[in-house]
Image (cartoon, rainbow, N blue to C red; front, top):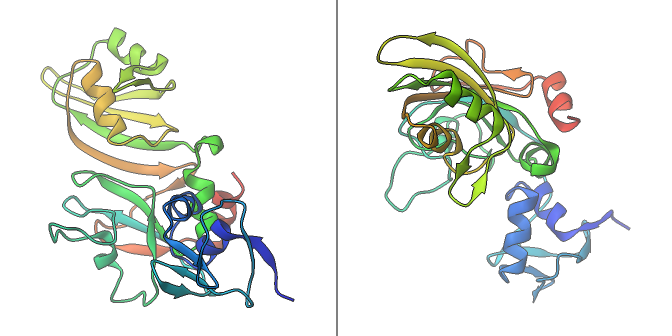
Length: 240
């Protein structure tokens, strides 16, 4: 008898997507177990015995897991495909990685820096689930300097869209008459969050780069290049 696991976990184990995304696929009737639509999140399957299909493609568990750090350049999207045929981050690793991987979280089109790629859904889940409060640190160049009162607003949390952000850590790295560079650490992952936070206090981001996730730092990895995460880094990220 094979291992019994929840359906969303099995989809993540197979490297299709993260566990959270797998839950969306299940509730959208895009998953079948033994050729029957399975749209209940409590569904369990037996590995090796039950046949699981996502969008009518059978998936299978792969024992080789990839944990990759990429220094994403501007001009690349983090989705695996794009309706406008823009380059994706997968293009940067596809010549060397012949297994399906996906990005852990996202960086917007004009943001560069640290991005993880993996086929390990549990790894992605640990990093992206809000309950785990994973810190992400960015270097942001601003078009207009912020006053200390505005910096303190970021530190307390600001309203963007329909929610108030949690307090951010902010450090001024450089300040001139017409521009400023700050280091900002958040542990949410809302769409374009740092850019929107800066706009909410009266400035605008001209350059944005993610430099660390938790204590795992981008370091001197060249732009557009990637490396495997060390076993220590993987263990740390999975157990934060």
